[in-house]
Image (cartoon, helix red, strand yellow):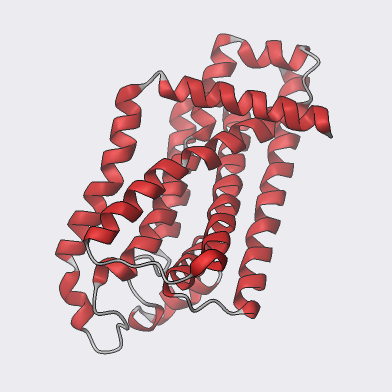
Length: 258
C-alpha cells in the first residue's frame, strides 16, 4: 500500500509539472471560469426576481454549479495527457517498469483533484466581490471538497478509460463533449429544479453532476442534512470507484494489445 501511494504521488507530481510547462493552457483555464461567472451573473441576474427562485443574488446560486462545471471540464481532458504518453511511448515504458498499474490510473486522478484547487479558490475570491458568501463552516468545506474530488475522479477515470479504448484525440474530445455539457445543463447549475420542465427535472434527479451541484450549493448555504449528504456522497464515491475500475480494466486491455 505504501508503495502504491508513493508511486501514485510521484506520477501525480509528474502530471502537475507537465501542466505548469503550458502557461497558456493554465491562463485560459483560470480566466475562463472568471468570465463565465461575470457573464452569467450579469446576464441572468434578473432571474433571481422570479417567484420561487429562492435567492436574491444569482451569483450566490450559480457559483456552486460553476465550480462543479469547472472541475468537470478540467477532469474531462485527463485522457489527453494519457494519449500524449501513448504517442510518445512513455506509457509503454511505464508499463514495462516496476510501477504498479493501479498507480498509473490513480496518479493522474490525484493531479486532477489538486489542479482543481486553484480555479476554485479564484472563483471563491471573485464570488465574494459579487456578494457570494459561504455559510457552511468546516463541515461545509469538507463536504464540498469530497463532492468535488469524487466527481473529478469519476470523470477523469472515465476520460482515461475512453482514451485507452479509442486511442484517438478526436474521438476522446467528441466523447467528453457529449458527456460533460449535456450533464451540466441537465442539472440545477443554472436553474432551480422547480423552474425547469418536468422531463428535465426527472433527468436532474438521476444526474451525478447534479448530486455534486446540490451538495456544493447546500455547503455554501449551510443547509446540509445527514440524509442527502450520505446518499449523494455515497453515490458519487461509488461512481468514482466504478470509473477507476473501468480505467484499470482498459489499461489491462491496452497492455495486452499494445
